[in-house]
Amino acid sequence: MTATTTSTMPSMQEQASVILAHAAGYASHRTVAIGLRSGLLRALAVDSACGTGIGLVRLAAHYPD
Image: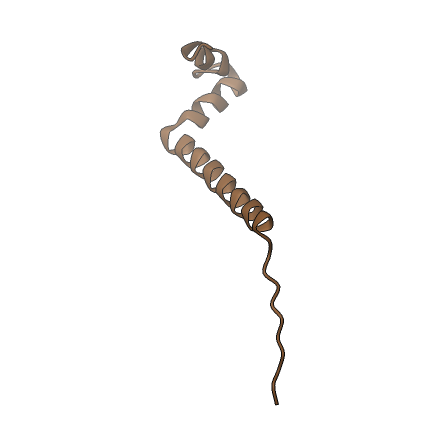
């Protein structure tokens, strides 16, 4: 007796969109992790909460267009 199995592979476009979503998630996770380790996120949060720290305006002044 022979069994017939059909496997449907996702298309290349479907696979690419999944891979891109995973890569974007990885990149955002790494960015947040680096910000947490370096203290950047804390410095920004402190500024917006009580007026001390580096702040977004001062940070942006370091990187003009």
